[in-house]
Length: 462
Image: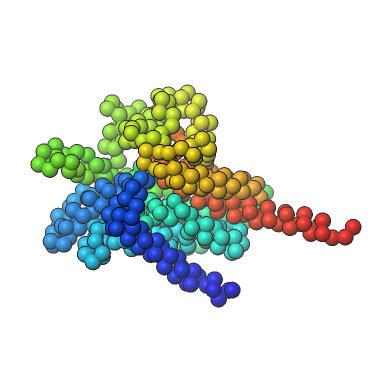
């Protein structure tokens, strides 16, 4: 059994499995076996329709590479992910075509990185067996698996977020030398860069995660110093980790301020020459913040946050105006009071949506079978959330446990505040549900041990 569970063999099995799924989707799409689900390029039009725009832009960039126009490709204002896809189309795509199978190098590497990170994260809170089960659950999660085969930036984003979380937990939980702490912080900076390149709308979450880890470590140092006394020096062993976390905050702020933001805007001249054509334009973060409102944003940070929440809700309402799975479209958030009043509802949406009354209907883009699948997955998610509460209680004395819980709660609540479309919420929420799954593994261990004790106590003769 141990021979079969070697890490290399498990990764090889995961590789073959993901390749098989991607190949199957490509064949189904190419032969139009399920035309309402997959187009000829294997893109799931119902749940990943933005992959159509990514493919169109990546094909144009790949043609530049094919014709040797490297300088044009480098100067093109396309997002980093689109350029990665264009590299795949210009190489693998010359044989396989510009379809989902051609970008398998990106998706497969992200998929394997996610599984490895889930395993090591879970092993921080549970035994190796539970860590393997958690990684297997993520590997076989139907909707997540489907998304990892599409032309979407979700897989590298999730991998980057998990890596960033793992780095923070290591620095928060363990004592390192100065050299090791700085190297780990640098690795966290790379992970922050991956997250920013994948989703530049997650800048606030990115910085908040790093700041949260610093605050928790400061609390831990203060409590240990108080317990050990002013003359004790053991608490000073955390200083390299503290400096590493502070460096990670600086790196997280740096990538969100120094790396350009890419926005898709219509170009009137090109549109006139080529109807429906769109170009990517590059901006810097201050310009993007200004674009959140036609007027100058308030100087007060909290008021700016409220304005940003309002603008993001408007953007989602506009983007998914014709979707059949929007909720609370009549809610407008314009003040601090509106945020406070809507916060309980946002928590419900983040943790519980889609609600049971949406499981049996038929969406405009998703069939009844898709709704039923999401309902079945939500039942599993409810179980995960319940076990995560048990895991939180079991590990309540560990700061790493609270870090995971707070990051997940912060992400899910933020999404509930701004995301009106359930389909978009479902995709953006994967990373935070995976973090809850890590906690649930520890909770499952506690539940299993409890029932074992009860069973053996009843089995013993009186």
